[in-house]
Length: 108
Image (cartoon, rainbow, N blue to C red; front, side):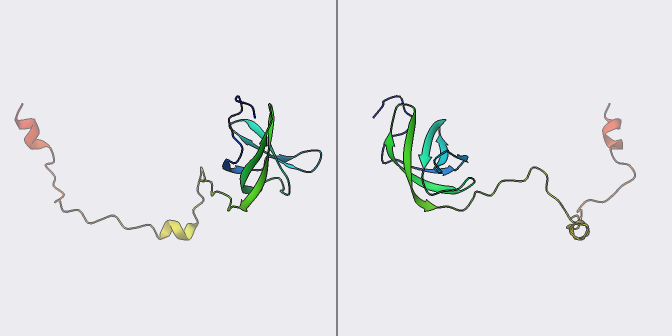
């Protein structure tokens, strides 16, 4: 085992399969370190256990399939019906007066 690798054998990680290599193994990265994972497809989100660590790459096995993480949408779409259902503004406990702020001007 190499001391430079950011992962160790028997560690478990949750990863997204970035791509598939020439031999059909999935390719995932942990802290930039390339791991080959057999039996997965591009886009799979899986929990893996590292089985072997070499100088530049590692190998891992799938220990479980995971739900893809829900990404926060940067811009949320709102339907017209949802716009009309907006909450009414809370009732104000203040009286609306014509002389707002006049008492402050008198103190000058």
